[in-house]
Image (cartoon, rainbow, N blue to C red; front, side, top):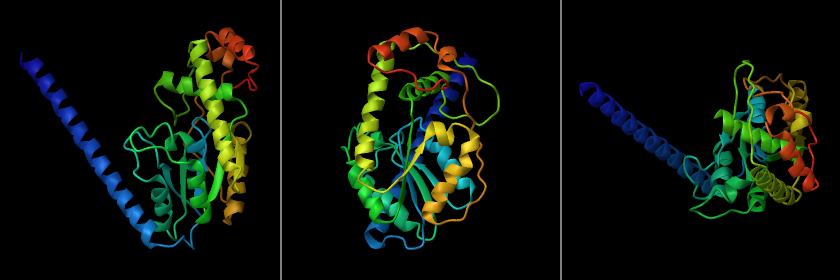
Length: 280
């Protein structure tokens, strides 16, 4: 009984500490929000900063690109500033714009997914991506989009990440993740990605932006330097060598990763789509 009680007490204590840490994180993030809102109201657009907004979908290399940019020493990375895992930001546009205005003299890089402005906001309502892009463009931010030439590989990458319980890898250990996906679920995810891409493109086409392609610029380390150099040229900063601790999860072909590749391939072809890449 003593052992059972001690385990129960330990579990209760761990849950209590977890709740305390979540509450403390939530409070710290809300305080950061308030400071950003104040800066948005009281400070002008930064004259001495080169801020970069990476506006793209998940599984396109947004975290990788931020890591590469920060490795130059030119930028302070803030990550997914509007993700809703911790909380929904009250006012996304003043918040992101305020982060930039508060950092006059420091170059920020942040990344935002279109879904952070729409379907992920279940409590506080959607925000138009065009309005966010317009506000940051007016404040001098450089907007970068990353697309994928293969939506099927993008969906597969998402499914692999879910199966392995992690979206990023920082070691060189070889992995081989095999998954079986219901064809109807795969096509549902495909349609979501296709719609998001169309919505992103409609918004981005209204503003100057740099366009990168995951397969060409980020999938292989040989393209990393030139991709970052293009961004540094656009913001007027000198080239510096790049590096990252992030590693590609695996380099196997879809035929090796998908246990039911033939079923998924048939579902894609039945809709007039097909794999445009052989590497996931």
